[in-house]
Image (cartoon, rainbow, N blue to C red):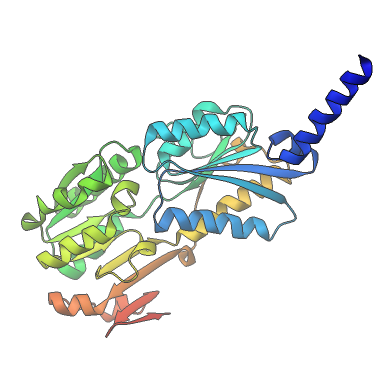
Length: 334
């Protein structure tokens, strides 16, 4: 009987080694298993993933990933968090507010990092943007300069009625709409918002207000920005200038102005946090929220072809600060 038990245990051990993929095995060989939950796939959130991977590839860390996509569904984000829990992940990363919230609701004893979350305090992820001693959550915000963005749109176009599509079911979307409203109030402009519950509603929603606005401002609302090509089409058909707060998704479109984060930089900043926590033993709660302030982390784009078609002239003072200019169909990076 003892020989049978010993043989049985050996078979179990051999099977476990061959199967791999368990958090315990990863810990034994020094590999760090990182579960990455993305709210949905679009250019900005995809760039966060790439930036994080590229940064960690430059370190001495041995890393493997479990990448999951909630496809914009909050209940799926919750299921992904439970899946990561069963896998014994060493670190989990939530890209987008709902994904980060789902992870923070499940994990209390391993590091939870959020990325591309506009207001982590309002989202209930952290109590303070400074430091949160003892908390296992930290991350990188994509808080945009909404007031300055809308001011730039107004100065170039003269628009006084600004259209805005936002996601009513996503905390990030509501916060950004409220910031846009506050910015318009301060500037003496009128915001014309319209809510959607998912990206499939964006076209109809924007068409319902497009004849009542002088320009359209789109913030980094995940459900909405994932439909940026649709927004671009509606604005182009109506002859209304479009401003996007996410330059990463407008390549090849006719969007007249884009000014916002290079989301790859948010990914590299997230990678640095992971390295500090895993390699250097730093406490997640001691970091507070990371805000990117380096001008190099922002990009300003102008499409002069679209501006000419719509009858606008971009002042040279703005062109001098642009990272990308599109003219005569040619994209020039500066």
